[in-house]
Image (cartoon, rainbow, N blue to C red; front, side):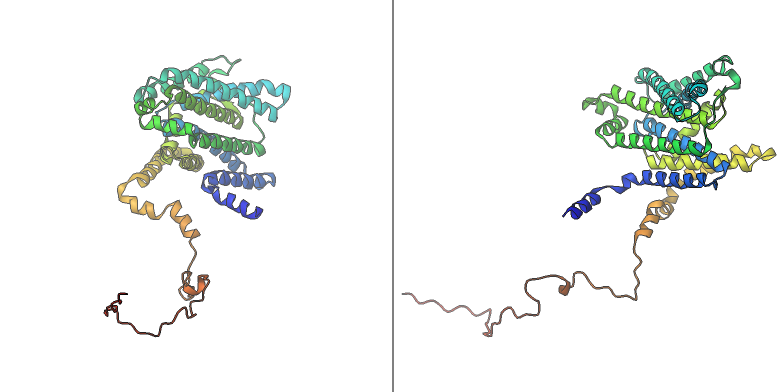
Length: 385
């Protein structure tokens, strides 16, 4: 009885909701084993760090652009705040606590909290803005933040040369980064699958109708901006730990557009698509920068743009709809799950009468009536008493 109850509980679990957790956890475990055994190259470890940061940025921006339906072009500004404040905290705590896990956690908390405060400050005036106007405000925020850190003194945040930050142990940083990605994935997915997530998508579909039904538009917009900027700031702290130096020029307009491309390419409001697009774009960027060196470096942006255009055409062109329907991940999984039937083997029909349990055998004689009757012959009249 207990076994049947456990099976019924397992059958009710929607395993497709946990597929992304399982894939990320298995991939992290595999690369961790390779790293600890010394079979993982430093370039691969660096690539894994960049992929985890890109996934975290794409997931956080997907909340604003994909689910809330607002256009933000200053996501790199929140990352810049987290990178500088978290990196400065780590640099100050390193002589006291060392470059260990405690310093790492404190730096993550400081960078994420300050970025969340900035998201709240930007979210308040941005509540009255929509579309291009909100994009201009967020873009201005990113450029202002970049200019502030660029014009600081060398003793505070390094100025134009950048802030020197401690480099965390390469064997562990990408593991911690993917654990944070799983936590962010859990927060965002559970948020969007709750009643609060339905309220957020209702605001995206029709803000006036959502307000008329009693949804607090101000509250949910602030929640989205807070959560999005929080994880962007944490991604900035991871970036400061991944590099020896943080320069404000990295967090410009182009980087915000690159994060936005990850979200749009993966599909608006598609969490798994954002993860795949962030991984693909980061891989393409690093590989093109590695292959195209010297005089060929000028072709990096050209080839990168062409590849993005081809991917967008493949995902959206109406003429390729049949090709997308035939060659995609769902059809591949369906082909793998579908059992192969050998035409030489004849399978029994499950609906055959011999396979159906009955109380009476079908070959038994149920009743015999030996008197033939004519259906058209009327019954004889009854005699009256």
